[in-house]
Length: 98
Picture (cartoon, helix red, strand yellow):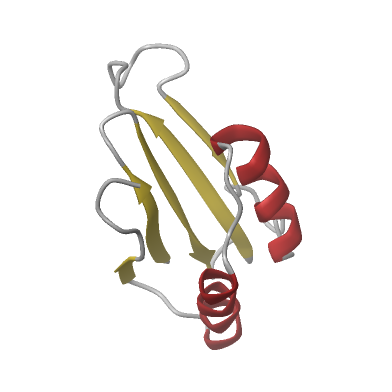
């Protein structure tokens, strides 16, 4: 499973990636201001087989739940992960303070 932390700040962390077992992109939005077991602390998608097979689906989900879109470089990396079936690959593609 690839994991790319695309946004991290005191309020929110956003993680995306490709899960080759589920054949699905996934997204996670962590509300850092809430406790882990508190309702609304984590929102996620892409944990069922083929749930988010196209990058556009993930991008739309991110807009709705994290208020952001993937940039072209992030899309290319995710497509590369999908095409290569990458697993256990972690990236941090955000700039401090984003």
